[in-house]
Image 1 (cartoon, rainbow, N blue to C red):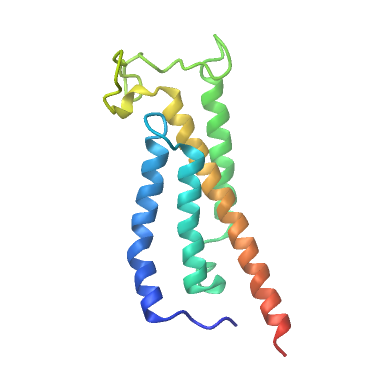
Image 2: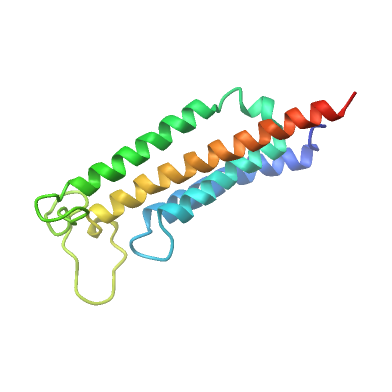
Length: 159
């Protein structure tokens, strides 16, 4: 069994975890307006889960986060990405049919400098969100698997 981290590390992890999550989802949501996107934001969110695993240990984290939950989220992200790709199949696969159509993600775009309006992305913003879900879940599964394997190896080394 790995020794428990100090109170300082646990307190700082508790404080910073939410900020990392919010920043990761910000990068996902603003990927069509600024550098970033689904992959980068998903990696940031997954790093927050890695921080939890390092701080609290595999056994404690697996009590409320499981690989099955991450696999479900990953599958949902992949299905949503393909569904958004098929939305514009009347023209072509991945056609941005939602853009300039009105509604939540179909606000008209202005020519020139981007005003930072999240509603102008059409299906691009939706696909960024789907990719973000897929990446954060895939990295979550990888990180949890590596952590569980390290825990098993650590138990075998100690007599």
